[in-house]
Image 1 (spheres, helix red, strand yellow):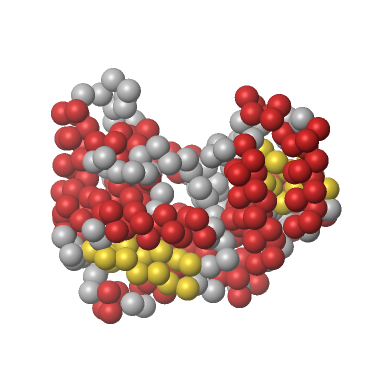
Image 2: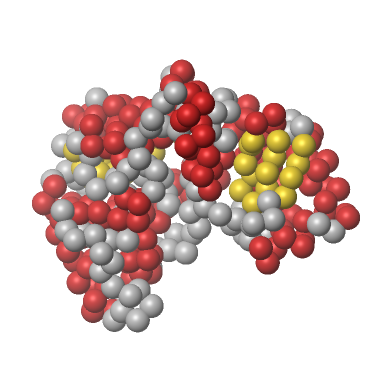
Length: 299
């Protein structure tokens, strides 16, 4: 594995510098041989898929897991992005919601999600005419709680961005270099990530979150936001700090509470700290203590 320090300053890097990184990534994919790309349609997996197409042509395939935790808007984007990349695209209906461990949401939920996808994909490698699986994990993912990375290791899934020492900023620089439409797309983790640890993940709860976030985006525009489902069916809205005032006007506040309560939330709150990606991980030590489990933290 390559040194995981950032390769470049993506703001000041020259086109030649980005081109060199792009060529190394393509060469790495070429060395893998035919692969299936775990494909969400986000910028990370799109960059890997683009490199795979350049390296392997039609000897690669994008594989998307479809389940209640995938927002319909994200599924459509994955289909559209695969079409733009000219990569063969396959959707698998996954059954992680049938797994008690996944629904329990004890802190390692992502392991069971990725384990389900990788197992289904591995069982179909011959049918897909590929020899292995790659994902879009980048080096920034190594510093967070990522149980899905453990599933990747168990299934021998390669992470070309990590192997090349590529961080998130460099991923976006590569996406701009290759003129991908998703280059500036905000992160869009699965809907289950909005459910607080210890609260059971159900199809009803993730559907409720999806509808609530769609309503808010219609109201305030396409800003990065989250509706977190906390214990006792409490909705906690996270929105950028400079947008908070938009939800506190009497008219807007009334619309928000009426809509979210009609969806099944018992109460609606606005987080005064604003939007913070991955902040539910702050509660992991307490959840682990309450459940008597010590979950794996990715190094």
